[in-house]
Image 1: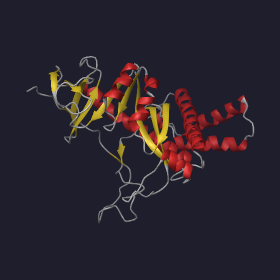
Image 2: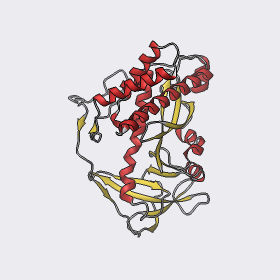
Image 3: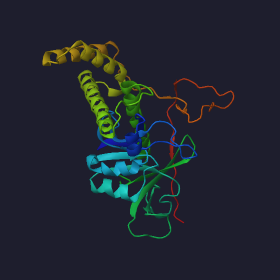
Image 4: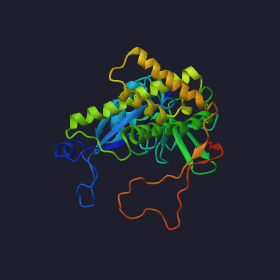
Length: 328
């Protein structure tokens, strides 16, 4: 199956009456506008290529699960990974009926009562429309996988892949981290392609949507170039710099008023030469960085006294330990 992740991000749009009425935006404790109106974008992103296979554009007041349900038809044949803000019966049914499979992180209150423990320690439980008391109509049966990372908190995953032999719990638990590849895709669009903390230009809602789709289309074309280069050089696409591809494509657009097949081949040959110069054939390094709020709502410091922001650093591989269930 193709592995994809569903997640969303926000884009600031110009503060006009039309944009604020259509998209909405954050507000302070008194209900007054606090910042720019924001458009919400939810994408179905291939984790291996960072390419969006589907997307929906909504407003700040709308939720990500609703937009995710609207593009369920794009996920046929995929294994879709989602975080714990998405679990719900409506989303579950929409994706499974569309021919997709799901791997979703869930809170401790969702599908917490085992009805059958499987041979590998995972268990079947019922996810209801509301609450966990009794077998309410309209619910769905899910397989629950619980595990710990380096002995930390128990992480719970829900999946419709019921067979513990064909779909081992350890493999599914290790696969969940691929959800973060969608964050890498959003960074490419928001920070590198659009520019950090930039505001979209359109003063009306419809051109705002067109501009969002334009950014997604350009990003899709850039990932296609990266995949072509990776295929020719037989390397992992993760080893190709998105920033360098973006830079050289921008330069080629500026230099050439009209693109011809010959000129496009020349650009691809130049990019391939850049890739060969620093092939990076090894596996992507295991790295991590501290998570900080980039744009705090308050003007005051959000760091504790003496807190130092450390740079990205190498780490050892995480140890996953399954947490088998016991039927009481």
